[in-house]
Image (cartoon, rainbow, N blue to C red; front, side, top):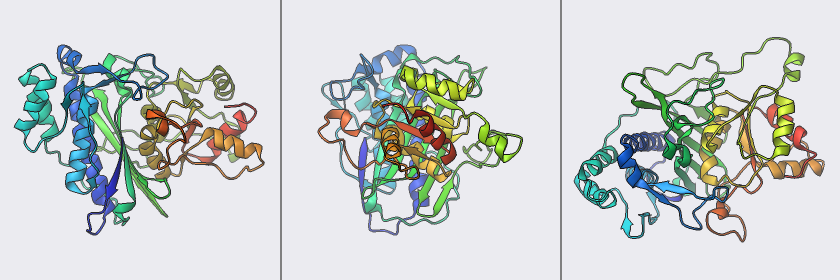
Length: 404
């Protein structure tokens, strides 16, 4: 979902904007967790996506009431606090227009229609949608950007399939989950309407940690701003530990702790996370370069998060089944860390033309020409998410002889 913003006529402070996005993502995470509490209830919340909405890599693609309600909460809260968004219609099923009403009671009454009259469940969801959440000072400093230049991409529930399956006992390999609720993310990215470049992003992991006694989940969020020469984010890159701060939900990103000379570092293999649906050719080449440091995981947002947190050096995907809403948020965070998210096919084309220096970053303001439905906003050239230009170059050198 893309939301073009309109100017409020007030002084623009990006610290307020990012705080509003974080606030909305935290409320959205609570809704996502609330929708998963009861399996009998959750079964009422799922419907198959229509043609034009589906991701073509899935034979059947689903959305949930959580997707729809989370999307509406983000529109309602961010719009109410700072930005005036152009209206978008959001429906669940054939007839019911889902929205966040002025009062909790009105929202509950509306949701009860979706839930076959289950008022108790509707009240739980409405309470989450209207709950006030306190966000600590994000310490962004003052960054002024005209709001009439801003557009917003939202993926309310990324990795819906893992969300529906609800697997809670997945075990990580080197901190990376291949599947399970941990792979579910909420993504809110802001981009420049004129240039298409990402400016800020919030990535929320609603199911980050499960309490072994209560079985209740808690989440984590990450944010970043990259505008001009200003780069700030919630991650403390030089910290060696990944402990959650007691004062905020920001988590320091662990770096790969390597020993030896600079020459030794250049010779070391890089690490990568891939989709299980990646092509055999790309898998084979990356396996040869990465050895045991290759991983597979669900969810484009989660794979990008693995790069953001330094669990892997790159996320590579050569297919055209990720979309602008999957990438804008983590791209902005990676930019704030000195990395980025490149268009794989365009980068390889430029290399074939002899241009070894210029890489083509993904942009978020231009639809794919002649495409229809969701495909209008697909990343047709695939992508490489990276924290270091050195690792991007390594991937491009490795794949330079193939056609993607």
